[in-house]
Image (cartoon, rainbow, N blue to C red; front, side):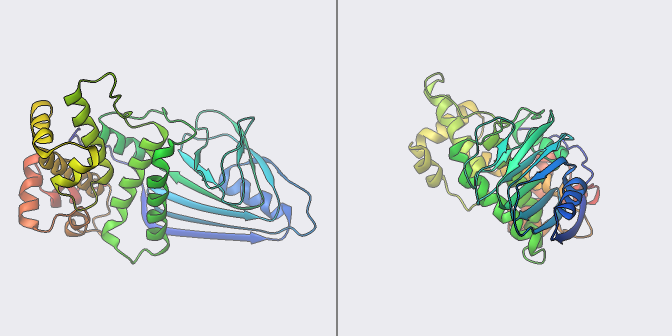
Amino acid sequence: MSSDTVPRVAVGHALRTAQRCGQTPGDAVRTVRAVYGGRDVRFAPTDRFAFRHRTVRHHNVALLSSAVSTAAAASFTPDGTPVLAWSTAGCLRVDDDAPTRPGLPVLLPTDRPFTLLVPAGTVQVLRVERGFLDAVDGVVFDHRFAGRLRSRPTEAEVPHLVARINAVAVNALHPDRNPGGHLSAQVLLAESVLRAYGGADAEPDARTLPRTVNTVQLAQAWLAEHCDRPLQLADVCGAIGVSSRTLQENFVQHVGVSPMTYLLQVRLDRVRIALQLADCAQTTVAEVAHRWGFRHMGRFSSTYHQRFDEYPKETLRTSA
């Protein structure tokens, strides 16, 4: 886990919302071209045509929702921005790939032109700033994802991914609620995207790793996934099925610190990401720290300084 400075990411912190609607295919074509950069937009014949679209941009993500009364298809040339798409109304299809399962977010191609077919109904789209995703990957997982993501998510990660998409959506639609937690929620979403689509390190294979190493890596993965919750050592032990003594000894042997000290470092790293990407005019250190379970600000500030050689207020002051 790296404590390096997060690369500066140019993001717009202000909430921006745009809506469009219409009753003709021509109106919809212009929207698809303007919003998504689509071309060769086609619609299945229908007696009554209608569409509506909404875009909500918030910090490092954009949430887009497009509803149309008939099936549609369009071609796209991506700009490298990671984009997830899904529809609860039916299956999506990218080129000649197999249709997706309704409600399953899929990562659209980022490095080649493609054609997307969508059903009648509402299609949800999530755009994540590439620089932000790369920054989270570099700090949390010690590397850059560099486009190494798969199109389909790991099934076990889907519930976490959907929950974190929903949390970010609620923040974007209700920006006055929990303002100090918005960036932290987006950091968690970025982690879920990386885990679900393969950018984060794969889970250890128990068949090829020494038992003690496997235990530690399983615990590290579990802590990273649940670090936003109040946790005790017993929670970690129960999740991976080992005694507290075994986990303590294995952590000290392979990581050099106890499991709870490691959890503290995990949380500090995520606080740092949120502070470095925050707008210092709209965010306070206390809001971000409280989001990650730090209640005693004096103790938190001292611990943060020990890890990063600067105080959290200094990180926020020089944020992007």
